[in-house]
Length: 239
Image 1 (cartoon, helix red, strand yellow):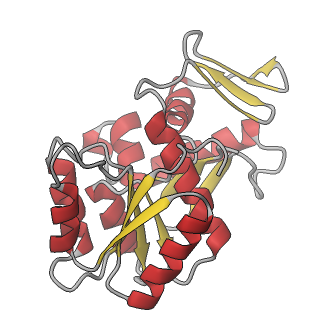
Image 2 (cartoon, one colour):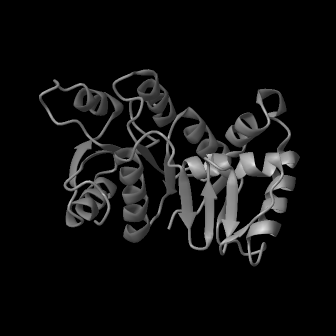
């Protein structure tokens, strides 16, 4: 598993035994160390082990737990200083967009809808572990392919040539570049770019995302950099 912390410990919270075994086997085959929990209570007990015990570096969480809704568990973890920064990847059979958005807004970092493949699972795990290992301060430069953003100069270039962006377009791209590869909900983007008073103005976001794609993408209808999570938000390419 290149670029991810070697032998990272991953807590898999899943009450379906067959899925838990599948996820654990996939992680173990990739050099990671999975540990299982079948309920929220077991997960909290594992996370509360004494300081001498190595803490998990990533949490993979099923939302449909027998003793507590997964979204409530996420909110509890984000409220605790000890687990506030723990990366959380949600696994869920819930297809409703509202549930995905609720999990992300509660503090989850990413999600996968069941059924999912091993390749996508491991790619999401790698991305979250890399981000967790990196400095919490956003890198001064973000670059993918031929697109680059320099925060110190507030400059965006494509194939080495400057891209002229309006202030709002720049703020939108810069917000996505803080967490490349990670979905950011419509609500979060509206709050961070326009302010909390504009949280219901989804058309603002769609209009400016269209402007950004027209300036950056070779084919705005098939974007390479500014990716849509249908009904949930947007994701900036990371690889």
